[in-house]
Image (tube, rainbow, N blue to C red; front, side):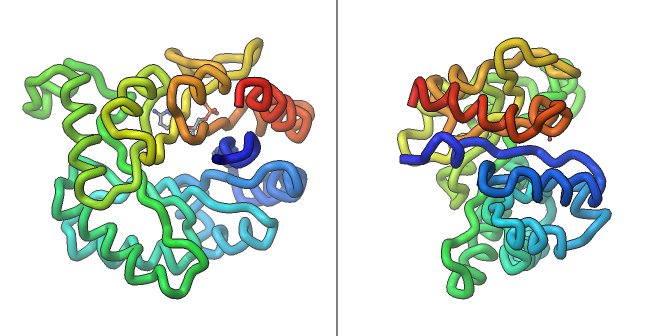
Length: 238
Ligand code: C5P
């Protein structure tokens, strides 16, 4: 059973200086941060170690998608770089997902815990029309379910999905799957560009294992206070 603070991943969608400053401030409160492509490509793998040095675990959100040989190597390298959770694209199919698993497995003996893999199913920026434009004719819901089941059957530890899909995905994938949901907003927080949101407590109650929260924490006047308020909200429902 995860504690409330272990369920919150703070998305550091900013430059290196601000990311490091936030990491220092959140030390002793947050346990997880998300490093996405922008920060990673700007700073390189050393950003992962820097977060570890600040006492934080890292969800490395690189959404890997390539041929299996390349993905095996990339996943192994990301694991050695320190990724605690790593994202891949389910669209790469069974062989690619299995190769990612091989990669993180190869690095596992040199780590305390194996890097966990989460698969992206259909990007939430896509809709039925954009799916059809790339030749996928089934419903978006069917496509998400198919890719989620495929990913978890071939070595992925779980998926990333919107909180609206969390309940259905929990039912489909069972109690052990790692279900990570962004698109989370505490009551009263600005929506920003997020449309279909849920509160942290709702997302967890619906079956999310962990939630990704960015701007409601990182752009708050008091990021530590904002983080702690979400912890308190989750404790009430945990
Ligand atoms: O600032 P905010 O809380 O909206 O940040 C959410 C994070 O989750 C961002 O890093 C964003 O890229 C990511 N994300 C998302 N919606 C998805 C997938 C990822 O907002 N469907």
